[in-house]
Image (cartoon, rainbow, N blue to C red; front, side, top):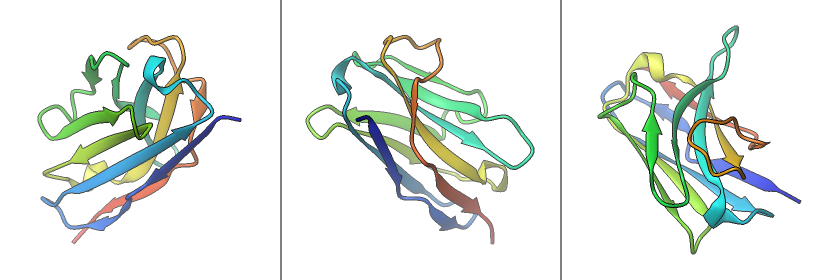
Length: 120
């Protein structure tokens, strides 16, 4: 059974930082492309960034230079370091796993999401 569990969300002031984690089980972690997505009410879920098993990355233009994705194969965990947070980064953040290993296809598996709120 595939399980993706996000953690690390919360309330942060503008300009602050947060680190999200996604712990995976039930998949061959090293061969899955892992991605972070976010969604606000009334809008489609959008890509934040993703990382292949080999470490190649892809980011949304809105987060380039502020967010960094990394992964620890031994811990089967992916991270999202978010710096210089803005109110428009407020969303539910989801972890996704794509067994194709591509940077360009959608995840097959999803986590339950973690809320990030950027507000003073």
